Image (cartoon, rainbow, N blue to C red; front, side, top):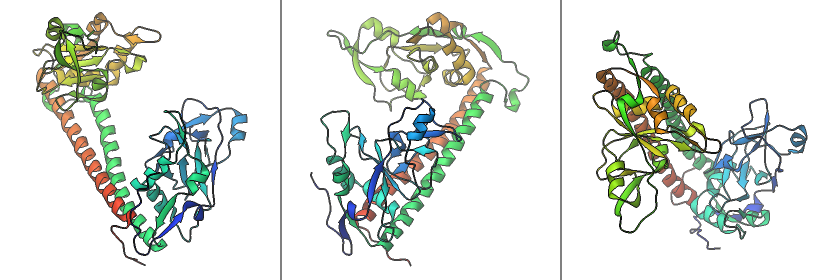
Length: 424
């Protein structure tokens, strides 16, 4: 094991975890359903409930059978630390601090819970922060064993023998108080982001259906049209294979559309090749709308994105369709947003054919019915929603800045590079 420990600061003492943690206990493996438990049900935690020091209680599966409920043993308790003892190489050793009791949730056999942390010597929350610090996290992952490339395991003995440098208890408490202030700021911004997104969802449904109108457009009728009457539909069959003798191109692929509302030059597109005919047919143009036309599940059909400000040539890849709007009738930005509302997406994915894989035919897309206002109203609706999107983007940037600052501060506090005074 390559030890990343730094020099121990004055007044800190190195101890092995078994000196401050009495024991580790695991849950049991039980059969469970494929959904989270409701508030009146019992659930078993998934390993994804542990993430970067945080406990995500909603990451669980409902336990339905009575005999499985009787076999369940340990629940998360306030002031304890959970440890993922078995997981993939990247996730083994994940840590989570538990802030309250969860009597309806149980641990699986792959998660430990700490027992008997000496509260006189150790602030459990400080220890959870320390266990996710880079040097301890590295050492923790390095003791994981297993020949499988997909699963690693940590033994209790190896975990409890890990050396950790502890500051005095009062300094641990002060470090926790400081980090909690950053956690609170991040949580406040995150809650604001969630509220803005929820507001945006309702706003889009009302504006893009005509249920909410701007005063200057009241009295103007929306018209029902078939998508094929206001746009050209181009189904792409361009695969990802690099073929000799063809021209080098960049591809907009399925996940580019799935993960982004706007297809622009900020995306790292895949490199491939294409023939002259394919380049002519599938090169994306400003204001094109791209939708996912094939998927393993029907409800992943018709995710939409609009093309904006591409600085170089990009082609539309396989399992996608280009909807090229007639700009005298509809704006691509408006159309992409309208497709993403529930009513219009539902119409499209209900048209999808298939049993194990679903797909839209060009005729399905062309026959989909839409209601659209004038170009002026489309533009105002799109601009209004884009302003809301910008507010959310700025809040996300603010949250990311707080998280980066917190990470740097934690590194300094948890190694003793920056010391805190006893405020008692």
